Image (tube, rainbow, N blue to C red; front, side):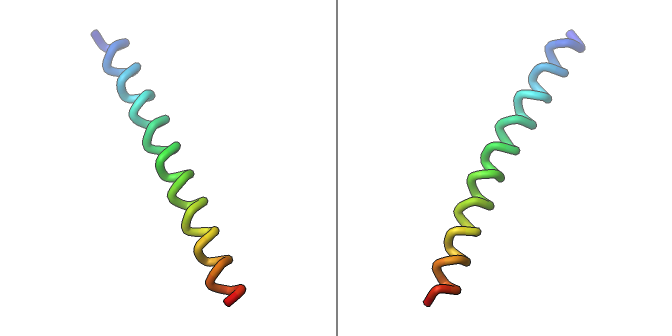
Length: 37
């Protein structure tokens, strides 16, 4: 049972980190575009 909870926890961490990575990448691109303007 505890292994299952640990598995879900790590999976959620991976998904959240992936979402944040894409979000920061998008924000970085937007800031670069604003600087070039």
